[in-house]
Length: 343
Image (cartoon, rainbow, N blue to C red; front, side):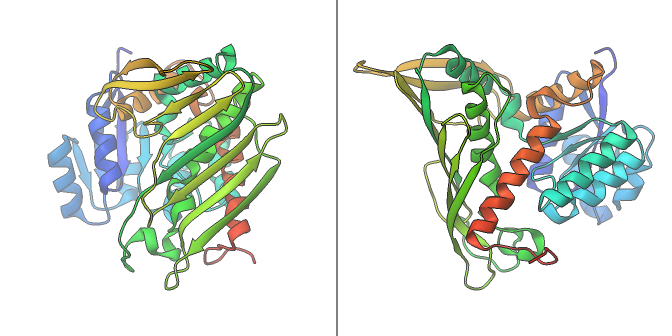
């Protein structure tokens, strides 16, 4: 691209900083502005990451004519509001996952972008990594034989803190909404690859989980997904339990281990898939080299925009909505509702 895409970032938390570093290392982007609810925080962030402008409120950033696309890095419940406001200003939207607390909110955000003609993508950055494309290729090629089962986990152990967003129901806390979308999304991706489709949505979702006695959010949870083509998936997520955050894909002729499925080459480098062929004594290593993860995401978004596409192929709107519906059903199975949701 001859002209780099000018980004604005709404929010100054950890993920905002990670994305800013990605933009700095991307081929296609530059950081034009950052906004916080506090001017001092915005200025500090801008100084660290080289943003041209620092704003003490989000509206001011959206009014900046130099900003072409926004990355929404606010807490979960504010995603829809700012996606709608960004779309109304004609800004393209890359929204940190989850796009909303539920399907109703997700539809509102994507429809706002559709109506104004701006590009929208939910920020499942791993979908933009070549390792993910290689996984799909291996499944479609028949290397694993007939794939029957996917096991996928994303979980970590954050000590309980009543004031932290992870444990606050008012901020959409809990494991399913914070990281559960990753294992669900890769299970849907693999199930789709089995039938040579971009993804497939499960017809069956069941789950169990442990709700925190004080906050009511899911500390950890697991679900079984059943797909129309016979693929089954076991997915798990958590914010208060350390688990082995890997993906395993089992087929009739072998199985694939993905040691780093989601936070892969964050700073750039090599990723390794381990292919266990039927009858082989040792797994075959498949090495995938790639640039920084969030730079790949920024470049995928900018590439779709430059090509005049209506959505980013790596994470389409239909994919986002299917993922959100599955998360809704998983939460329903364990009895987790957020304030304001219908009973």
